[in-house]
Length: 236
Image (cartoon, rainbow, N blue to C red):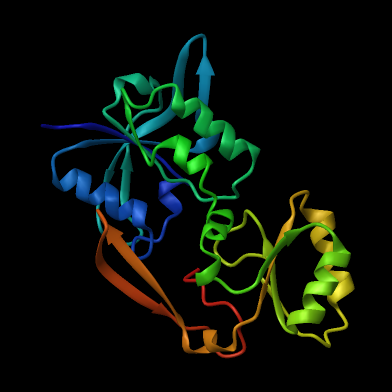
């Protein structure tokens, strides 16, 4: 059976065809005979009882520099689709959360992947608090005194935005780093949310493993090793 599939994602024309998982999902959908429609998160709306999006039909191909063809612009009712893939990158901000509330209004009659309720209620840096035995000592706060005391207890620390992604804004702060005060002022200036602070684990220099599961079964893994002179191991 051919499905009508909408991809809510960042602009498809700008993705890396070798590194973007949504592009790979789209290719597989086409290989199975499904039709694709793509729109960006800012083109999703609620209009008089309908959840609508403005976007274009697309055809994908694994051809660098020529990986997508577009149909005509159209406003579509998402209730007419079989599947919507919720795939745009964070930041996980109020715009992102509002999007999940809108998609709640078509799910599950239109199958939204992943379920917008659980996307909204499972931010990755908060979800890990359920597993304190598997994580380094962690602090979530905006209180500078709390951060100073945590740093005093644990030495080198990692400071990062609570709702960021791709390693953006992640800093390793050594115990004797004189830029600590200025760094925290910058976080306070640019982010209204608390920051997440964790004890730095030197073993990260050997890499961390990102494991891919399908229906609970491990189907692949990659070891992410920081580059020389870099504290981050993000694939970005």
